[in-house]
Amino acid sequence: MPVLQPLSTFAKSLHLGQLLYQTYHRPKGILQKTLKRGMLNELGDRTAQRQMETAAERLPSLTPSDNPAKIYFLSGDRFWYQTCFCAYSMIAQAGVYYRPVIYDDGTLDQTCSDKIRRIFPDAEMITAQSIEETLDQYLPANTFPTLRSRRLEYFNLRKLTDIHVNSHGWKLVLDSDMLFFRPPHFLIDWLKHPNHSCYMLDVDNAYGYSDALMTELAGAPIPDRINVGICGLNSDAIDWHELEYWCKTMIDREGTHYYQEQALSAMLMARDTSWVAPRQDYLLMPDRQEAENPQAVMHHYVADSKPWYFRYGWQHVAACAS
Image (tube, rainbow, N blue to C red; front, side, top):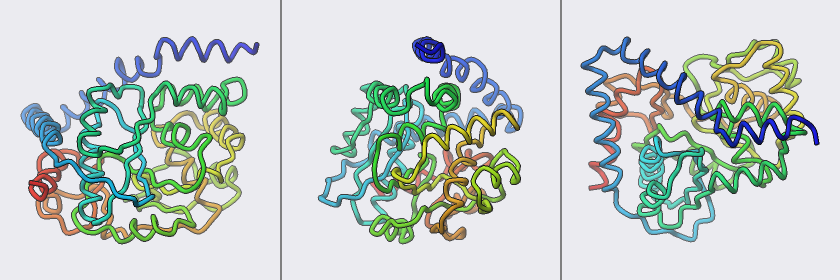
């Protein structure tokens, strides 16, 4: 048996990717945020975050429908309540029920799963064990060593591997840290007739890799400012051998990067026409004024907008739900 297989299995058994995240990346991120925001502001943000988690447990239970369309999330015990607010706000604003499909990032315990199912009784929960079994069969480590090892340390890659491997058809994958305030007609239309990839716009290119390398690998010009908070892809169109080659070559030439999953998604989308969400309606990183009085259809709260997510954003959704 090739050595890569037992090494991958050994690393997986020790949860080394999670260990690295919990002991280095997460503490580093918390320290950087605290230094930037200040201790009192950071404490206020943490309090607001806990209030949001508590409020998620009071969101009304929704009634499933026979609508076949689904929305997909990668979630865990630190994000379950954000997933709930995102899915709930989208369904409430759309006036159409979409069945949530939740892929376990390895931390989603039964308590969190039960809380999700209280709101969305038919939510489909894909367990970490079933994901690993699927990957072992259809994305084996001895054939796809880079993808399998990278996803252990870089959870964002699981939005591609875990959700799309051995799957079929179009899928709309959403980041959990988004909220909807008006009917999302763009997404409603896409879910009715998905025939091209779709995405929202970033404030700038955030790929982590040179345009020259990405263009060389994809064999096509890379669209500017793709943000995969909204990511519609066709599972059948992904060539996993090609993605393995891309992932390995990117790391070999230019190292690892936090935005690699976004770069890989952009390379997949580069070969076809995509639906692009209107930037003024699907807004990345809203400022405080916009968060307090939302004018956009949707907010994606990243980076410096995260405090406004916890202090203001979710409260609009909770108020409408009560």
